[in-house]
Image 1 (cartoon, rainbow, N blue to C red):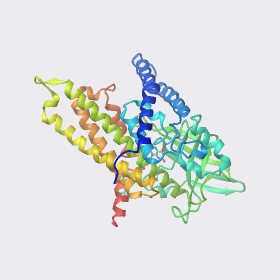
Image 2: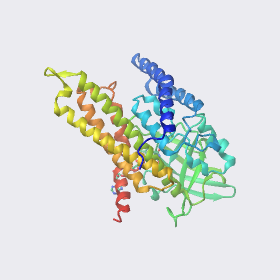
Image 3: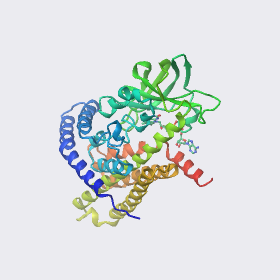
Image 4: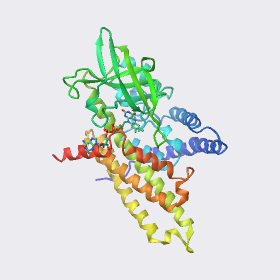
Length: 388
Ligand SMILES: Cc1cc2nc3c(=O)[nH]c(=O)nc-3n(C[C@H](O)[C@H](O)[C@H](O)COP(=O)(O)OP(=O)(O)OC[C@H]3O[C@@H](n4cnc5c(N)ncnc54)[C@H](O)[C@@H]3O)c2cc1C
């Protein structure tokens, strides 16, 4: 076993760190000033995020995980994992905009399963940051049990006609197109009866926004006789459920990396704060009631790190790693949330302030314990792998 990060990936991390300092930090500082002077929150953040993304597209980081023959770098999963971790560890809110994964609006290898003549229309504009997409699987009556979806697609001559409602769709209100999962053979469902389609924005209606406690506010999407060309199928007709699971599997590994980086950021902040802040005539760090939870956090971070890197190594070796993805998704979201909570505690009242370093991270991590397969669903998958 060789636990060293390969030299070329260490060099890539250094160049990404420079990019963050050169291109992202100044935009983040300007955004913070704009907000302090009463500027608009969400729209200002998005405009700044898109500016960061354009720079990242120009440098190649944003779509680095896609193969070279479509314009990416063919960066292996371990490389992307390290960049996602580093972006999260930087504590820069805008850093996540510089990378595709684990963002559902970003270019995904799933689109490589489209007919190649559609790459220019759907894949390439995502890779250049000109467009965004959304991933529409969940429905009001089918969340964890995704094979129970009822959105229907019926072939009609040279078209498919789609009817149904999706909800909780991240970026659904802004996306240029949706990747939509619909039942094409009710008798088969998950075993060959669900198909994935690309559906242009003009062919569906955006319903209400679903405001959450985090900074992500998904929407409903309504398909009412939505007609799309017959070639807008991703992969094989009937292969959609497997495509969805591959997408979610890959997403879980990168969510794990994001959790690792966020936990590292929280611990870095907490260590610095407990050294600097005094109470009862001593630095907070002198109290074991403060330092022990941080020591426990360090142990959990190391466990998260090696689970995550090992998963990336498995993916790069061509393994399906279904249960291992679930282990990482469950463990990292759960532990990172606990770590953020402990670290917030050592900041006292300051920890609860909106401008504090951890409050937004904690809310984001709480969300990650539900989205892309809740913790319990990951345990179902892990138990199944145990033969239970
Ligand atoms: C902010 C946000 C963004 C999202 N973005 C997207 C998106 O872009 N695209 C998309 O398609 N979906 C998206 N989702 C949907 C998300 O993936 C689902 O919310 C999630 O899969 C859970 O489904 P549900 O909410 O219907 O909960 P339910 O399936 O109703 O589950 C409720 C609870 O029961 C538990 N449970 C369910 N089955 C079992 C079981 N067998 N054993 C034990 N416990 C079980 C669950 O873990 C959960 O705790 C998003 C959700 C949110 C909140």
